[in-house]
Amino acid sequence: MNHQQIRPATQQDITAITELLIDCAQAMNQQGMQHWLGVYDEQSVAQNLEDKQVYVLEVNAVIVGCIALGTDAAPYYQDCWPDAPPADYYITQLAVSPSSQGQGYGKTLMQYCFDHVGNARIQLDAVDHYPALLQFYQDLGFEIIASGIGLGDKRHLFLYQQ
Image (cartoon, rainbow, N blue to C red):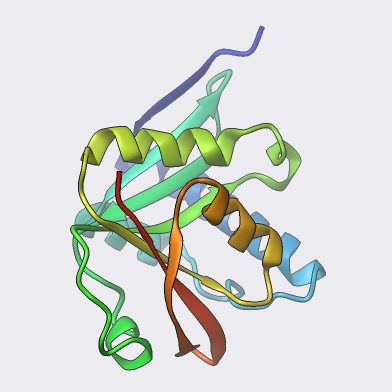
């Protein structure tokens, strides 16, 4: 039986989280999506631990997923969606190990964040050329509230409110 738990990430998790994000970036690159390539390293992951609430999903004591929950929008939001309403929280870096995808772990991480923030307004963004991810967010109850170009890609801004 698989034992799974979600817990706050610690400094000791930086290497494992970085490897997870790089594995996901490489898997997306094989599908023609380069937007995560070269973005994540141990320094950026450590900075996220300082700036955001980062959670990891462990299965049998191995980190298979992560998610970051912050209170500040990404810097490119203002350029991409200048008229978008602010949110209480912003989700970034939802990642599940390529070998563990399709088992509901992404949904589990998202639900953990929903439970954590209660009735708060949550925003996240996703690139247009990842239709399965766009559908995943919509199936969770997110609505597209704006579209634009950010970091060189067409992106959609999603809003969730319980």
